[in-house]
Image (cartoon, rainbow, N blue to C red; front, side, top):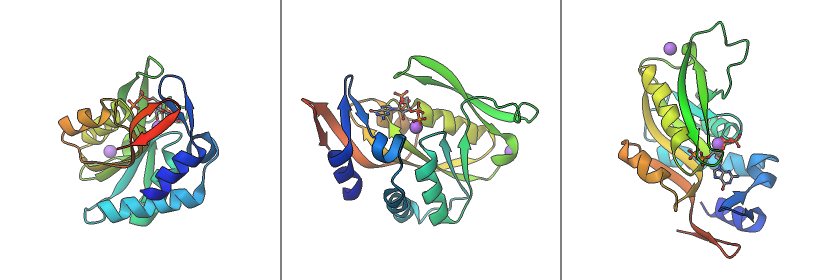
Length: 190
Ligand code: G4P
Ligand code: NA
Ligand code: NA
C-alpha cells in the first residue's frame, strides 16, 4: 500500500535493534485518515471471503481493526493482555504469547461469549515480527470453534520469521508494507 509506505518513510523513525518507531501515526498518535484507507484496503483484499468478526490485540491493533470491521460491517473484538477484574468472573479463552522484543510471556484473553463456533475471523495487527501474537489469536479463535479466514498486517518485518511461521500454520497473510531491511538508518521495502 503506497500511502502506508510513504508515511513510514516520511514519519517513521529508526531505533537500535531494528525497531521502527511509528508513534506519530500508529502507536501513540493515530492517523485516522490513514486508518480509514487501511480498512478499505483490507476490505478490497479479503472482501470475497465471509468474515463475521475482526480480531486484534490491544492496544495498537485496535485502530486498524476498527476501520476494517467497519468496512465489513461486522464487530471488532480485541484480545486483552491482562485479566481485568470485570472479566474475572467470566469464562475466557486464553493463550500465552511470547514477545521476543520484550522477552516476556503474557496471556491474552477474550470472553467466551465474544468468539463462537462458526465465526469466520479476520485477524488484523499493526506489526508482524515473530508471529507469536497472531498465533495466540489463532488459538483463541480455534478454541472457540471458529476459523481464521486471513491475517491483515500493517507493517511486516520480513527479515524476521513471523510470515514464514504463519504460512507454516496455514494462514494467508496480507501485509501492507513489507520491510526487507532496516540498515544505515534507512528502511528498504521488499
Ligand atoms: P510478534 O508480535 O510478531 O510475535 O513480535 P514481537 O514479540 O517481536 O512484538 C512484540 C511487540 O512489539 C508487539 O507490540 C509488536 O507490535 C511490537 N513490535 C515489533 N517490532 C516492532 C517495531 O519495529 N516497531 C514497533 N513500533 N513495534 C514493534 P505490543 O507489545 O503488542 O504493543 P502494542 O500493540 O500495545 O503497541
Ligand atoms: Na463462545
Ligand atoms: Na500489536
